[in-house]
Amino acid sequence: MKYEFTSPRDCTLSELLCEKLSFIGKKGLKSLIKERQVRVNGERVGEDVRLETGDVVEAYVTARAPSVKVIYADDNIVVADKPAHTDTMSLPLLLSGEYGELFPVHRLDVNTTGLVALARNRAAKEELEREFKARKIKKKYIATVVGAPKADRGTLRHWLVKDAVGGLVKAYPTASHGGAESVTEYETIGRDGELTVLALYPSTGRTHQLRVQLAAEGTPILGDGKYGDYAANKRYKVSEQRLRAVSLRLVGASGVLASLRNREFTAE
Image 1 (cartoon, rainbow, N blue to C red):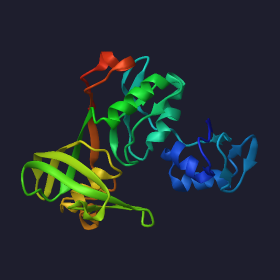
Image 2 (tube, one colour; image 1 turned 30 degrees about the horizontal axis):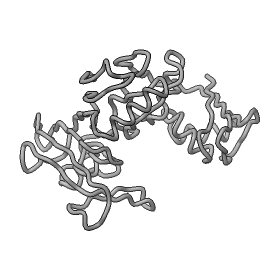
Image 3 (cartoon, rainbow, N blue to C red; image 1 turned 90 degrees about the vertical axis):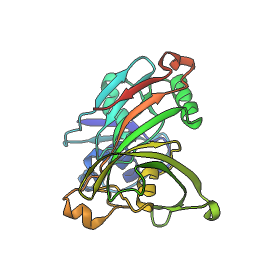
Image 4 (cartoon, rainbow, N blue to C red; image 1 turned 180 degrees about the vertical axis):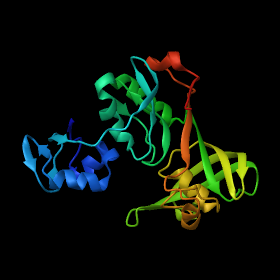
């Protein structure tokens, strides 16, 4: 199948392909370039070339695209259930055949599954961005963690600092190290031996927030390959992080989304 898209910024070809065609995997994308199955502005390429904003990329892919379930759609938004191993930025391409141009306004980690809201027009995009910025979109996640928190319910508060060199985010208990304040409420909803199932309600949306905060508390998410408990992941034979976005509620929606105010979308 041929996928065609335009580069939104200056970057390398591999960077853009990892974003748009994440479901193929990094190894598959390298083969795609090496086997000259990619065209840039109409010319075949066999190496990881630099792209400029506006360059047109065509990729000829034999791998089967993942199925993306749509929970809700109207003239303004689409709420999709993102599968694992898929970058949020791949969703517009995967859903374009049925829904046309789509604009992601928030992201889930590649291995986190669950609900993502995508705008179908500029007005909806601007409204969703305002709502997320004002923290008026309430999110709920379910996570399976190794260990158990000290209390059955409570609030996690950390200051997260990005380590650009190591590609990690670090959590600190106070603002003394700078960083962005991150707040998540949680409650225990199940236990199975050393594993605990938590409902998580983040009020901020920092990079890797839930994964980093839970790891900092000594209860890493099962299957998390970056911040997790490697021995436990191996013991339970889990390679995908057990974190799922199960609910989105548009508390203060207005403008073109006014009819969806307080509407809650839930995943299975």
